[in-house]
Image 1 (cartoon, one colour):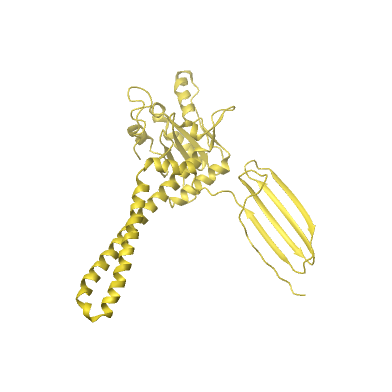
Image 2 (cartoon, one colour):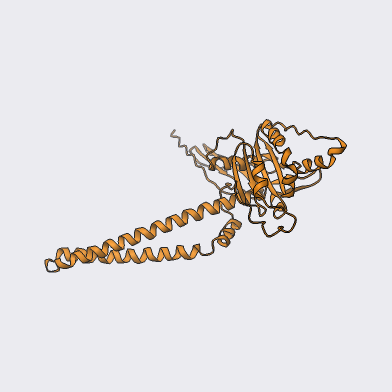
Length: 331
């Protein structure tokens, strides 16, 4: 008896499940029997559900079909990122439209010049016009190539900007624990604080905590809050001075380091994507600083430059409050 086997992978969506769920479907047809199994795994809550459906069908072959619906990629461009891109560069669409129009015009002119050149080469009486036609054809080809290059460069910059804005939108949806009873998203800190995200082993975070001690008060004045993310699963050790004369300073130290990431797998995925885009080793400890408006201000490998933050960032209170909120500079 001949046997036919087929394996297909199809990406789709699973009905009645959360948008971040993973669904796996297996259909098996063996000598007249059809067994279809649908497994759905909800990744957002960690719970798992499974559904099995069996049915019979007359079919003298073996057919195996596997379909999987994966969650949307972190690099998928969100609508909010597209809108922000249009706001930041309002004339980009106009430029790209004219580039396409000039490419079409030059291409049409080149096509006409090509037909004229062929006719001139075939007709000895028009041999004198060959030079002028060839010059016109060269100009058309050069113009089409130039505007095609400009369009390609503009489109590349556009895609890179939208991908960056989309990653920032994904970051804004990640959650932080402020205290035992309050959990908020990163986006809720926009206009209120400049977050500095640290990702590395617990020893790296502990040392960064120690290095920040001298700059605690000026960092608080500039609205800086630290988000420590331990990549080795161990909790970093924070030692605070509990003496009475250091009570106010210790309170500021606790405030500076009070935030804790929630749903660590999502944080880990986002940080890993950032490292891949920056060609940084997955094991390298990194820092990433945000502006008041939530956009990425700067990043690097190793300990954050606390002294540079103090020197470059304006205070969030006082006569310069609001005026210099967007002038965060870069490290």
